[in-house]
Image (cartoon, rainbow, N blue to C red):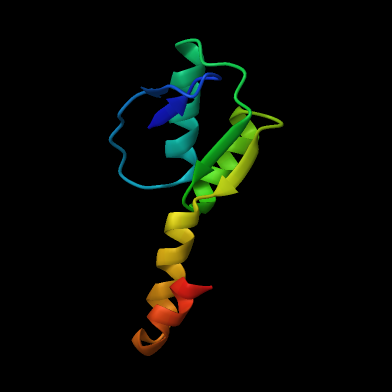
Length: 91
């Protein structure tokens, strides 16, 4: 997981191994980050794991969440017939 400072510098926040993408797993990550001093989280950009979104709401009240546009595009292409892939990227 990476974070970005106010000045735009990226920083590795941590690396965790979990057995699922459940809310409980993500809450553990959030609790670990807070215990190590993470605060002032304004925005989280991620893929759309329901467990992650729920954990963010519980661990970082008021944080804004945005779906990663790269993952969103890949998800659309997964269900879009291949003959339309070129058209999709022109838009």
